[in-house]
Amino acid sequence: MDTKILAIDDSSLALSKKIIQGGGVVAFPTETVYGLGANAFDDGAVRSIFAIKGRPADNPLIVHVHKDYDINTLVSYIPEYAKLLAKVFLPGPLTMVYRSHNRVSAAVSCGLDTLAIRIPSHEGAQRFLRYLDLPIAAPSANVSKHVSPVTARHVYDDLKGKIELVLDGGKCNGGIESTVLDCTGEIPCVLRSGLVTADMIAQVAGECHEYVMKEGEKVRSPGMKYKHYSPNCRTALFEYADRAAAFEEYRKLKAEGKRVCFMAESAVMREFMPEDALDLGATDREIASNLYDKLREGERIAEIIVGVVPCKQDGVMVGVMNRMRKAFG
Ligand code: AMP
Ligand code: MG
Image (cartoon, rainbow, N blue to C red):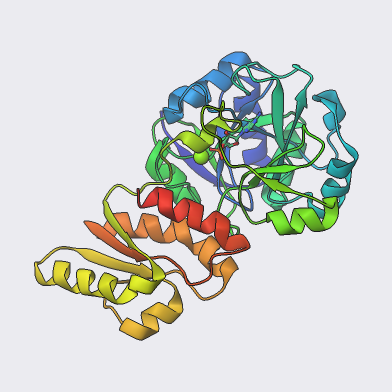
């Protein structure tokens, strides 16, 4: 199969509609990462997403809708706090999990009685979703366990020959996946951290829990248990306090003739001035936005990436740190 990368316009949208209505999949941009979308009502199409990515069969998908879609048709109960949160944060990088109405394919939630819904703010994503006017089940558009894609080219590198169309909306500026929030209980609970933080949610909803798996408990967000976000090269991660040791390790590997890159925030780069720098940037937002792009750049040019954990570790950095630790194994 020939894989096309097309800018989002009337003709590529018409093609995407034809593919989706025919039970196929289309990759599309969002403000977080690129998604691999299929019609959530179509069982065969949803199953093919799992096959194309090599995704474990018990890792449920998020359904994406445009901002005027009536989600009451998909879910059975929306608590008051969720309505408040939706007013403040949607469209945006916040996925909300509700009790399901079981209207979409059972393959979307892997048999769970809940459904995760997201309304992306990316203009191209909104155009695509509105054009189709269907709930689109979509995980990140990468091969399972690899680094999530933040450009159309990243999607192409992972899925060329396996999908027909990548809608190109430029680089995703959010950079890490959406916050996943369980809205089935009396108090909202963050299952996966992201750009909308637990503090931001608590300010609107009054309270917000952060999910910590207890011994013996059935995991509430199955995706959390899998290896994720890993580049196809060796990696070594050092704590911020050990950054001098990280630089020593980088120098040692380089002296041995290894192709090695040093990944850290801008301030650490200025401290050590490595020649092979994967600079994550200075602010929270920059670091989140650059992480996956730099991991993909690193795997392309290096045999090993030596990384340093950023200094700041609260707020948005909770989600960044979670991805960084998983990526570095
Ligand atoms: P991805 O699409 O690769 O970003 O992964 C989607 C994330 O959302 C995974 O961590 C899933 O476990 C989580 N998720 C999707 N649907 C549900 C659901 N119904 N309940 C809890 N978590 C979900
Ligand atoms: Mg993913």
